[in-house]
Amino acid sequence: MFPYSCKLCLKIKIHCVNQRMFCTSSLLSPLQLPSQMETHLWYILPNEVKSESLMKKYVDLLSPIEKEHVCSMRRDELQKNALLARALICSQVSPRSIEFKKNAHGKPEVCWQHSDDWHPPPLHFNLSHTSSLIACGITVGSPIGIDVEEKQRTMKNNILSFARRYFSREEVERLSAISDPEVQRQEVIKLWTLKEAYVKALGTGFAGAPFNTFTIRFGSANPNPNAKDSAMVIVPLENPSLLSTNWRFAQVELAGSHYAAICRENGGISEGAPMKLIVRKTVPLVEEHCVSEIDTVV
Image 1 (cartoon, rainbow, N blue to C red):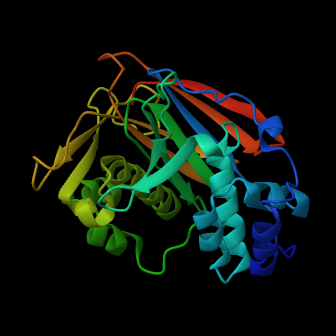
Image 2: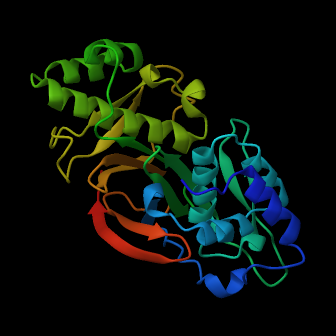
């Protein structure tokens, strides 16, 4: 791992005010915002970013407070992932135009800098990461939550014991009906990502909406959760007034190694109309390419 540790961060912080290492605006293209019918999902593989000079450019995207936060991280891997996550959000828009705030539950939100001649869009985003992949979901006008998990994630406990601890009775029964242990393990991971994406979209996180207080039910028209035309609905089991059901889901594989789940509010999407999910892989400020475009009704 290259040495972009706290010492490097502090060096950059001291000198970047007087001696710009590069011109940020020349590297940033216009922000490609989704339409109200679209959801954008960007992801990056940290192991593919090995250039120290590129990491210096990512540091330049940070505000002074964010630089101090990154430099306070003791492990190089944590610093790197924090920089990549920030770059993933801001690589296509001048970082001076946005700031971040947190809601009452700690979920980061965009806080645009307004001006008299520019009215920023109601942009929503959510981040999720493992040690080997970082993803960001973006929508306009609709809250969003995403979660990514490694397909090969192992579980220390028995799979069904794990499911009984976190999932609803109906979900456990559905998982118990799967005879193949490997398929059962994969379905537990997929269900976890869906439920995590939902509570992140709500803005409450797990503490505000424990997984066993609601069921994710697949539409009766096609009970196969892998089918493109199966609908997913939220069934609140406790405090239904706190758990809304006006949400759309999508689930995809990323880089052949991760499951990703996306949950967004229905805002801007008429009933029965598909949600368009555009997935892009990127190395911020260097390259990007579209991986897939999916019309989904789940």
